[in-house]
Structures are given as structure tokens and as C-alpha cells.
Length: 103
Image (cartoon, rainbow, N blue to C red; front, top):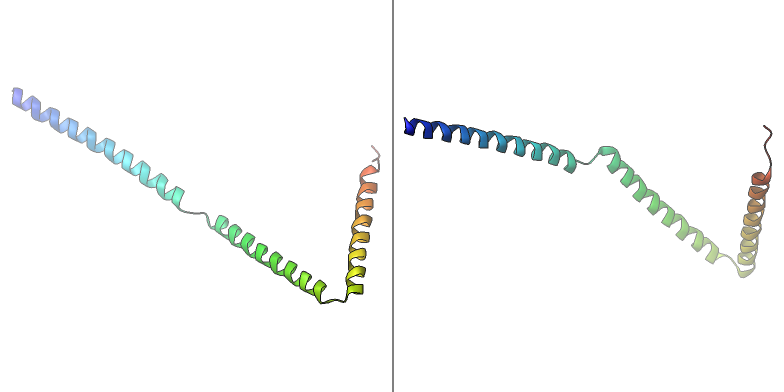
């Protein structure tokens, strides 16, 4: 009878360990797959950001090349126009911010 108790105890212990191991391995596998799988929208956003950055760099390079291809007089005129337009935009922004709104 003592031997029968020992076999029964071992079978219960083994099945308990097997159930616990299965639960742990399934939880790790399922959450691991979810964590490793990247969202398609996230991948698309990163691609879009990368292409936007490349486009901006190409635009700035072309703008600088265009500026350098101009004569000195034209470069001076372009600089002054840029400065005047930024000053004008700043004053317009200030005037819009200072307006009081009616209740």
C-alpha cells in the first residue's frame, strides 16, 4: 500500500508540473509573439518619416545649390527678401495674437 501512494503522488506531481510548464510556456510564447510582431501602421509611419526626411534634405540641398548659382547681387536681394518676409510674418502673427475676441 505504501508503494501505491508513492506512485500516485509522483503521477500527481508530474501532471501538476506539466500543467504549470504548459501554462508558462504558452503565456511566454503568446505575449512574445505579440511583442515581436511589429504593427503595420508603425512600420508605415517610420517609412513615411524616413522618406519625408530624405525629401527635406534633398529640398534644402537644391535650395542651397540654387542660391549658390546666383550672382552676388541676386544673393543679396534674396537674403533681404527673406528677411523682410519673415519680419512681416512675425508682425502679422503678433497682431493676430493681440486682438481681443468678443464674448
